[in-house]
Length: 215
Image (tube, rainbow, N blue to C red):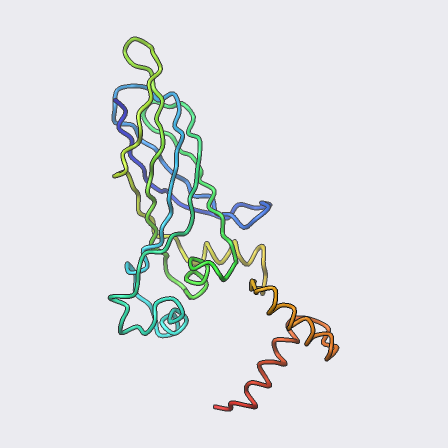
């Protein structure tokens, strides 16, 4: 019976994708005797936020997600990044495949807010695997086994790798998703005051708020 193990070897930005993408190089090893005919692989990628230290600036930016740092032992939790699927071609002992990890810049997504708050260092990731393994038994008949839920791999992704791919696609930019009624009010404000761009709208509102509530 196949006995698969997984290890992450590295990650790098994928150029010229439709969306920002990291290619995670995954080594798949088979400790069983049967040659593998193929694997329909599923992977859940999670951020293990509690498995790293944070400097003062990072702690301030992460209050939005986890509250006051003094409470993080109770409030800091694992964050889902994404679900991935990949096909693994036939192999005998081991093979390498690439998992394409999308990097959304939507700040309504908790993983994006977490990653953007980090200044340097590494992101502790946990990859949880499932899926189906196809192999031929001693008689040559095709068989299928499910990958046990216990199969996983850890990887410490450099923050610089994530920031590189984001800066390549969205240099000096950020995305905000607003309710339609809020957007309509901002659009009306923009037109009424003949402000040429959205940066100007937000700057005007921030300046007005600072004047009303000076620190």
